[in-house]
Image (cartoon, rainbow, N blue to C red; front, side, top):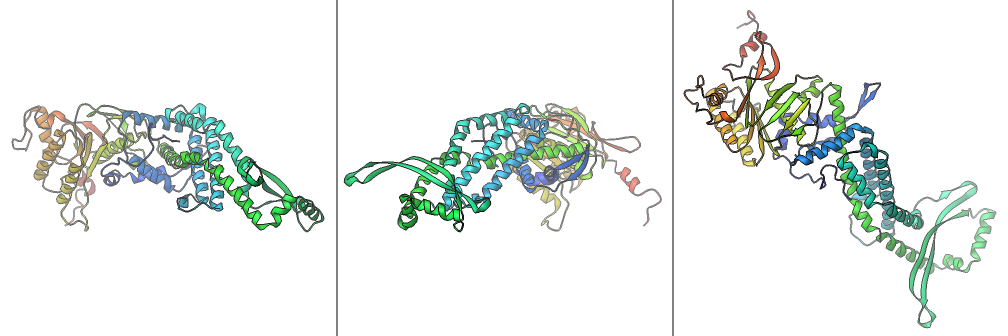
Length: 561
């Protein structure tokens, strides 16, 4: 039995992670999303009543699934369809997550984590197997009922297929047969359980009723025993100290067979052994059923956790009035979005950030320049977060979003120098870039945030140009925020065929170098110096308007030496 809720044709294996997932998490601040996905928001009368503590399992699942990109368009839409069902019927995914979790907890109490120990079968192990078999039957019955109760709202291929597989592999006929077997051998599993004590010192005990068939062999001895039937009968016994109890014991002792078994220890041991062998054989016939579902519950719980976390994340988006959309998959080199917002900042700062709208077609390079503190890095992070969410089937914090699929995805954000560094910042940046180049594959995207700015503007521009040109010529898509204006203007000059200012004749002709593959955005700045945090299509300028910040932080006349 397979869950198949994350992929249409396979189970989860945690294979195919981003090559540098730790850096991606750090640069894009994804821990905030993992944590938000693990917290359930309770509402009352439309208002937030309680935000529960993070569920560590949900947090771990979201981290694992989000760091394994989907590589096929149909897989992305497959997940989106299931998630739409969960959005439309949140009670279903809550119940599925709780049910699958309870199954695993019950199984753990029965010794699931130590069941792999080797050794010969024992009566205790046999009793445990019976209890596990009973738990499997009960759990699958509850799961089938859950899927049936919510069936009208579950329209996705993944959930409909799960229901059909369960009905096929745990059919009504199989369930009835297993329930009959469990009822027949109930006496064996109940022997180690407390007997039911009733009123008047009357207790009910489960006892076996076995009918054996045999033939008469040499010397009139019975041979070739076969079990004709085995059932469990409930018998009521009274306390031996009471008059009715003594009468019951006396009547029972008049039966020769009963007397023989009760008084003859060897015969009692043989009867116990016969019971054990028969029950052991019956349970062994159910092994294929146990094996077929042994891995199913783990997978079901893990995969249900992803959708439960996605619903929690949606609640966080609604909390800050952030609209989300299910992104579309488009061709390489193209990206279009409307009101795209930086989700991590929204959650951390509890605000509704400024959204951006843009359309990029048939480009391999996006260069973002403009005013300091104009929202450029925030914009780049919003693109990176959206790309990660698209590639794991989650909605994006935008009104509309469409992008390509880039399983080979990297980020290269500037780092602050600290005492742990064994070399300068530029050396550290170049080492990280070298590691990225070593891991690049087909369908790659790299996000550069103020890379190579730790040296002079002239040297940084030369390094940035050479690195970016090599990447784009290799088919890598590069999105970069930069204050290296010589680099940006050089690329723009190649695009327009003009001679850039201050680049000493480095420009090529239109169609050469990077220009024909580049798109340029700039952080918008109003005439009075105010930042709108909007990105607009604009040619790179020769200033980042740092004087605006100087005048704001150090007003005229307040400078003291």
